Length: 277
Image 1: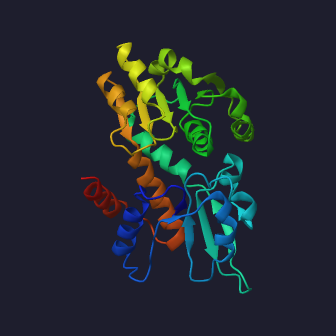
Image 2 (image 1 turned 120 degrees about the vertical axis):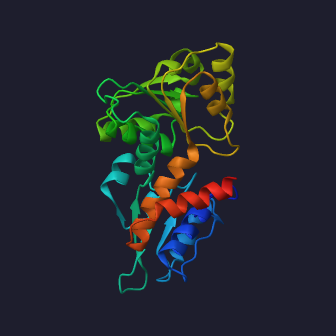
């Protein structure tokens, strides 16, 4: 796992539990603090003993020009959170970028949805405009929401997300985050991709307005846990899916891609619960 900062990551817990359950005793998974400036040198030093990398912020877009191949979903989304390191028989391995965040988001949101909920009429909101927001748009499209509203702190910084949405065939409406308290409570699906504590102001507004929410919230932040937004949403009688659920499912897909084995999700989930407890 590469990123900056990285100390809070729960990914090592998930992957190590998977390797133990699969009997891969010689496999290792570590969290390494790598900045955007350090990424190229780190990847240039990868050898045949590597199976893959997990990437978190701020590396999901920085990595794109460093790859030999990018899988179609990751290319459309414009964000890579998984790099597969494959032997080529040459001096350096082949690096292939993939995106398992979309899988993780879909699976996590489905945990909060009623089994018989109709998809056609769903409305959705995304908080934030970074790489994870692009994955959220792709996930929401899979769940039947192709016209979500994206709330951002500055409309001057949405260019990359707009291009990703265009490639996906998704047509969001963009609005300032300041307008979210009045609108977000009515959405069927809400995904917050904001950094830790960045949604605290929205949480306070929802509480102050005594908003009556009806939908499912997935806040991808999980440190601190629970987030202020999750607490406010639950108090307003909404359904909350914790951010670590998305982390669990995207990690399971990474394990499948890196090891070639179906992910032991139950063992990973148990390890996650124990770590959080």
